[in-house]
Structures are given as C-alpha cells and as structure tokens.
Amino acid sequence: MTSGTDTLEELAYFLDLTVRSDKPVVVVGSMRNPSTLGYEGAANLLEGFRVAASPEAHGQGALVVLNDEINAAREVTKTDALRLNTFQTRGYGILGVVDADRVAFYRSSLKRHAAKSEFDIAAVTKLPRVDVLLVYQGADGDLIKAAADAGAKGIVVAGAGAGATSGTQPDGIDYATKKGVFVVTTTRAGAGRIAAGRGGRGRGGAAGPPPEEVRRRIAGEDLAPVKARVLLMLALTRTSDSR
Image (tube, rainbow, N blue to C red; front, side, top):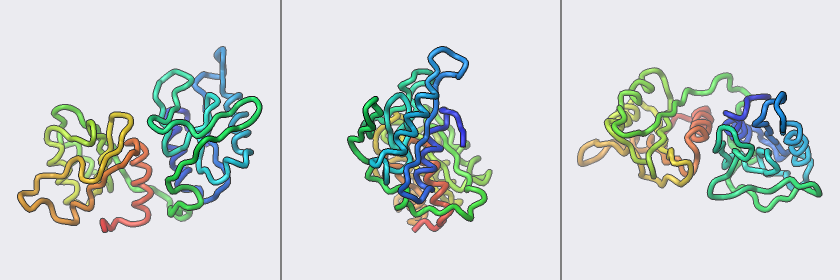
C-alpha cells in the first residue's frame, strides 16, 4: 500500500486502529525522490524490515520508521515539507531508534490499538464522511453548516489554542449538532490536549443546548485534526448514538 509521506501519518493511524493483531505493522517512506542524490528510501525500507523483525515491536501497533527513528502511529506527525527529520512526536518523543547494532525501544504507546482495537472493518465498504475545518480570525460558520448540509456525519474543528472558535463558528456548530452531526474539537497548534468542555459549546440560551446535542460535541484530546478525523470515521462505523 502506498500513499506518499504527505498522508503517511493518516494511513499509519488507520492501520493502528484496524489491524487487529499484535504482529508489527511498519510504515516507511522517503523524503527524497529516487532520482536524487542522497535518496534514503532504501535505507528506510531496510530499517522497517529490521523493526518488524524485532521481538520488541510485537504488540506496539503501527509504527512509522524513517530517519533511523521509530514513532508511534497515533503520535507522529509530519512537521516539515522537505527535511529528512520531518516525522516527529511532539511532546512525547520517539519510541526508539534503529542503530547499526540493533533496534532499541525505549517506551511504548499506552493507547488502545492493534489487537485491543474495537474496530472491525471487514464488512465496511465505505467510511462515513467527516470533514476538517480550520479556525481563524472572523471564521464563518457557514462552512460548518455547508458541511452538515452536504452529508457530513462528523466535523473536526481545528481550533485556535486550546479549542477556541471564532466569528460565527459557534452558530455553525449549533446548527450541525442539531442535525445530528458529531463535532470534534482539536487544536491547530500542532500539540496539546483539548479537555472536555472546550470549544464551540454553542449559545443555546441560559439552559444551554439539549443533552443530546452536548454529547455530540467531543473533545479531541491530543489527536491532530487529521487523526481525529480517522478515529471519528471509524467510530461512526460502530454507532451514531451520541450516548
């Protein structure tokens, strides 16, 4: 399976949640074209094989191996358009390294994945539509409404800071949740956790929005917006019940 490095982190996280096995799944790539001097794809591929063969990789879920480093699929993100060290885990650090003498792991990801994942997509032919929308100064909530009207079952809001919205976006979120759309708040900052109750709570009067609408507003924790989208798509294959 190929995707290019631009969407590698999404593919890796999807595999992390859907390959229900403790066998290692290793995703590799290259930042340089095979026709250019210094092409590192072959070296990354070899290191990927070495990681997959390592007993310590068993049960670690999907792993991303580039530039002599091992990162967890859930945590890794592409941080630079061109540099070889683009794939990094901000805040938590790498799982391990691939050196000449051996593959060395230093920690594990504690989040549920692989054999412990609840997602079984063997009979799924199409994933539910989930859109990602960005917060910026004076952002218009009409884009959120348009996504809901176009058939989105979920919307991920890449919020400012710790999940703040702007402009008329809260109105758009109110509109979407009333239509039964799930809205997940994440951060565009590149790192950080969104706590429950942050972002787009709506202005439903003194009493606030109805409980079922509140339950459709979900804090994205520390997931990047594109990974929150992957998780929400898979979650919607299991249930659309807000409870």
